Length: 251
Ligand code: GLN
Image 1 (spheres, rainbow, N blue to C red):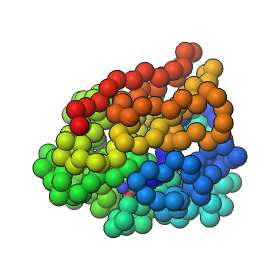
Image 2 (spheres, protein in one colour):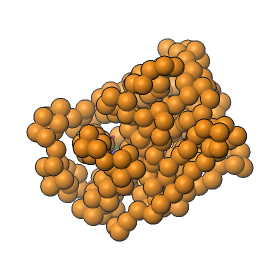
Image 3 (cartoon, rainbow, N blue to C red):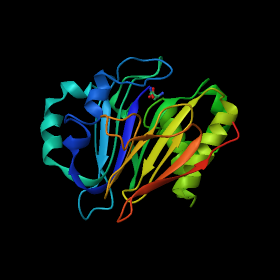
Image 4 (tube, rainbow, N blue to C red):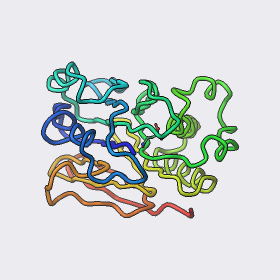
């Protein structure tokens, strides 16, 4: 199962979150808490970040292991951002290894990632997919469960649903139809950072002026706090960074 992370706080070099000694790179080849199959996250990666003064993110994705992309290592050392969402992919069996299947998915100011699998996809969630405009179905980023989840979340955001309620309602609707799914989602617009835990790992690192949510801690900093299962997690940056949660369910 993939790894993902989100960061809000003072601008940091992408390398600190991704290619440096801490961060996602190590979790691509030596993840510590893979659940539900997979040993490495080598089927591609992606990162989205917000340039100063820009409401819309820049996105970089590749269908190769992060450790093979030496250009990205150089790039990530020279780019800083106050809001980042990144993911490393371990493709679910049967789903294509292509750049367009790598998170983050994006629309306008939004960035989205899914860590997990929708059991019985696509048949188990066919009736949910029917709520999407046909054009959205025809233009999915990729024929994967994650791309469909993003289309569902995006559709609810476009209808005016809040980020929190869009993530929560999609997890609950999918879990009701596809039990045993793993549905750790993450969504940001550069200001709010929202995530879910649904049968997969997630931890928070709250610093004096920043908050990071990640599938797993990248070091042994005692401030890392793991979340319980079936939660909606809302990260808050600013002068008093922290996280609040609310229960998801029923399954
Ligand atoms: N099922 C998704 C995919 O194949 C997510 C992958 C994962 O979390 N392992 O793209």
